[in-house]
Length: 123
Image (cartoon, rainbow, N blue to C red):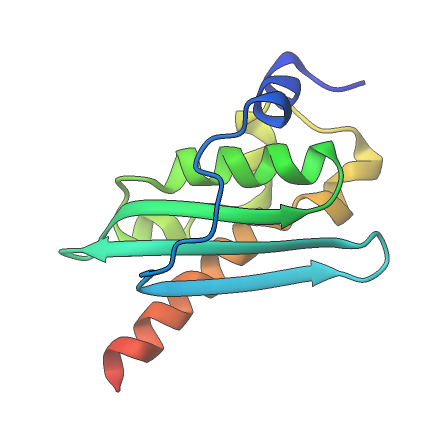
């Protein structure tokens, strides 16, 4: 059973869509369940000024992506790197155990976007 927060973020996800001028982008996926997530960030003064996502997956995958964007927006890059899968699940008032592993990849996508931003900045 899904929490009310999971259902809300699935039915009305926040920050949806590809960001064409992103400073960093990260994509992760789980071939077992088919969930694919891309996270896009816009960074100003070492802070995530804007963030969006595109997710192909189940309701839990969409909800975790939406919640991750809400958790990360306004955070410094270091603070955002500290966001874990468990933080996302806790913010959604939990996920069914069967959904924790497959669908909660959004924090990983966020971390990949931050790594991508840092790599691009070094060039």
